[in-house]
Length: 230
Image (cartoon, rainbow, N blue to C red; front, side, top):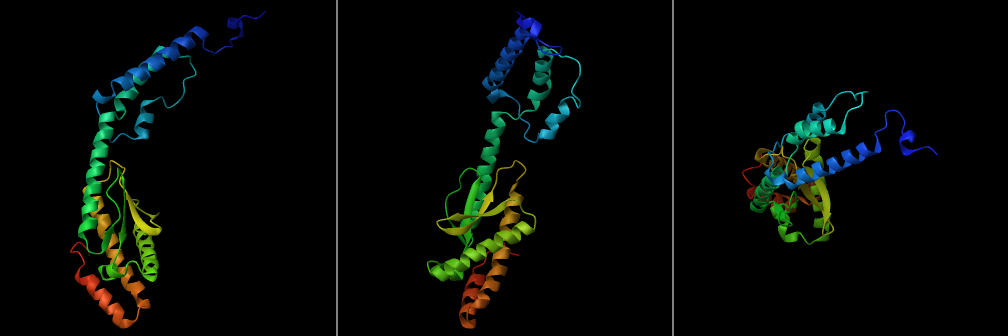
């Protein structure tokens, strides 16, 4: 009968060493998570940075589990983002969402749909001149087309923050703020672009209205437009 040791082919790790490496690996992972909140934070680390720490080519020579774990502890772990970094990122994103929420709330041509939640915020472009008629089915259809068109126009300009979603059965603009690279200027610039395209596309859509009604609505909307529009 062939023993377990005899069945192991060249290059295979022996069972005892395999057990030892697995145990030490689990201990290392447990230790890392147990001390997560006190570790240093590098928020700008990317996957390519981590790959650069590892060997470019896999060694053909056998390496011990101890050596592999030592490389992981000494080279990779210091570059990993810890829980503190995640807390900082969440806090920053909440602050940016609050800023966006205030921009929407204070602008007469936008409609607040909900309070900010974590990293997503949805709102709706609603020209001030149409606010009183928002429940009219034709106006709701117009607003759906308008908000869809605004998001598409901003996306064509290269913004990755803006998408659309359905909320309460109608199209809404959605902004996602989940990257550490997003700053206040990005939020302000994107909102200004949304407001600008909203104004331009509103004029285009109002061509289907009769002239007197169009002038009344446009006048009302423009007079109440925010100074942020360009």
